[in-house]
Length: 343
Ligand SMILES: [Zn+2]
Ligand SMILES: [Zn+2]
Image (cartoon, rainbow, N blue to C red; front, side, top):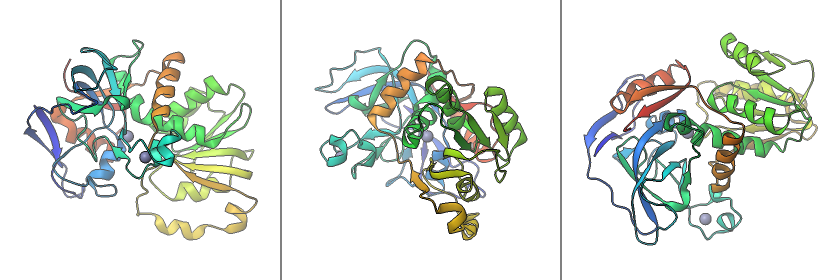
């Protein structure tokens, strides 16, 4: 099969083509796994974190990609949940031990044995991939293959971050950063918490206009102060400034949820501006979001079909994966980027 693989860590300032097209043997499903013929795979900021070594694959070469939509081609022994031809999606969770205190509570995302698709096991930047059937999810007919792909990461992780805010209907939510995940969270809030107002902090005036068009009640720059304090804020940026600036806008006991797998180091010194009375006192909380659990993907896919949420996508051929990644790096974003692998 054709696959775009990562052979080592790269600095993307020095190398704009980190992935290489290679021919690999078709994978064979193990017990409990299914073989998927990949149709589309979303391109995510986390791939940049993998390539640049902030969350590197433990071995090389690795096939990246964790927003995979395709059709079941074959089943390993003991895999009985799906039939050949069924359309399924795979997100960031590839597997977990299944037996620890976290797995038993449905918090596989916190398992020490958590394995990520496209980092710890080969992902969807290829014509085929294998996955345990319990971490493959049926995709409702509402979505095309390309529309479904970005939901599997940005959507599912956005859903988890919204759950972690503990928001109730009528409480005010802030979003700092307004990329793919935040814009999906805004749609979820409007559906699930119709009396809640959403406030958006974004550097780019274009993103702020977009937020207002989608129904945010207020949008301002990263360090702006909205007219009221907020119950929770979700941060989806790769930087530190938005974290410090968001904390000052929280109500007492307000919670900041950081939805980022890693933060980039370039503005780390901004943390020195952290002022205890202004930013943390009065029982403010900071909580990070780690990975996704099986439950998040199941519940979010159902919610996305119910709303429905249909992301704007920009499609690329598999061969153009490097171009898609570099455009993401340079923030040339016109809808979620999706690789078209087979139809
Ligand atoms: Zn992702
Ligand atoms: Zn476990």
